[in-house]
Image (cartoon, rainbow, N blue to C red):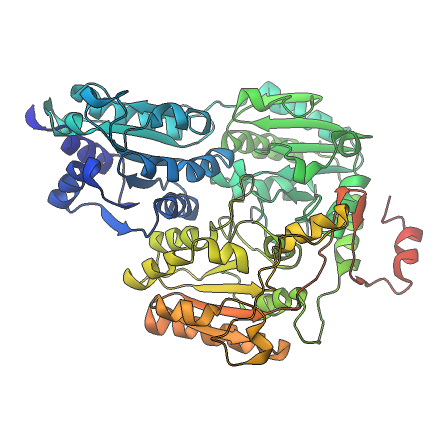
Length: 596
């Protein structure tokens, strides 16, 4: 046993639990922890410009690699409340991050002391566990329990609040005998998997819906192997995108109201059985459950017991970690194949592939100002298969999901459920911090970009290179499109006459993003010609490598473009031209039975 400050025990536990990076902003109430970090020099700390930014950096760091847990740190009071959005975002998408806040001394709690807020209570709805440590001797075991909870069952965030005097107190602690607690993850039984496979075998037009739980469980290879064994097409959710490569013959497209493919929606509607693994049946994926479930049976596999039946009651539910379940699915499917007991779905898979080949949205627009679809077409052409996309919400994210291609797990890093504006830049920096050699590309509209633009200075200071694509239409585009239902265009215009911009064609777009980006120590390029998008992206990647800072590629878009979406998966308003590759157009699709 050794005598040490309680905060030193906390740092030693984090080391043992594999923590290598932290993101935060120091302050008076958390300085004891920073003193311990400085003494140990074992955890790399990146100074954010906003504490919410630190929480999103921690999210990006976790999402970048299996096994990562991002840590964000802030002082008492507003630091904790600023990080609530990050905790909500992490909780909604099942992402483990550890948030550590300073707190006033115990004697000053509940006495309206300066920056003393009950962050434990505030954070409870958006964390797996939120705790103010009131006894110094409990600090090491509190951190131990935090890591156990973050990794067990459905992953999620934890907040630990440390009063100043608790941090400073001396305790007895033996780090040499410390061991992380065993992680609990439920596993499917053989009997359950046998029944699920029997139900799949009884179907004529089955699908696998692959959720983010497959990526969290690092089980994408197993998913692909299972799909290939049974010959069943896969529909990934937005959070599961990349679990099967976009160009795999069994990748059938995404389904949903916004972030979906025409062929993905058509295939889901034509199916008669769905095996969902590690997914939540989120409403942006399903639309109304009446339309989504009509005429098909469902098996739902999820790590969280209370997820089964939360949105709608499946015909059969299995509580299991996605990896454990897929290991059994693969094993039993192999046994059945060897015994000649696997049913083939070749004709169904062929029809799904035909939809994918024929049912497309138009992307090759040549006019200026640039249409956003052309941006994603060019990104597909020049960005490599290893590209990691980071984005959050808005028409940029929705169109990106409709047109971009993703080829592997953790290559689409998206804040799926919470969707806070400003998330993209700090999250991308967290992804880069996890591995600066990665080919990271952020995607933002101008409002998402402006929300936390100051975090670009973090990328310049700490040499975190990536390419940030900024599609600028000077609008809150998604809200403007939503306001069509109210016959208005109100309080969503970001444009104004910028007196400091000499180019009359750009002054009406408002903020001079290039000037701001350069002022923050980063590099910036601007594109107004659709034919130059690809070469500019290539140039930006070279600049990011050369200067080791974020490089922003601003693409000036036409101000109003409606992106395909709708209230039901069978009633998507396409707005723009549909590029039907069937020689007889949509009538040919119908005659071929591809819309049934």
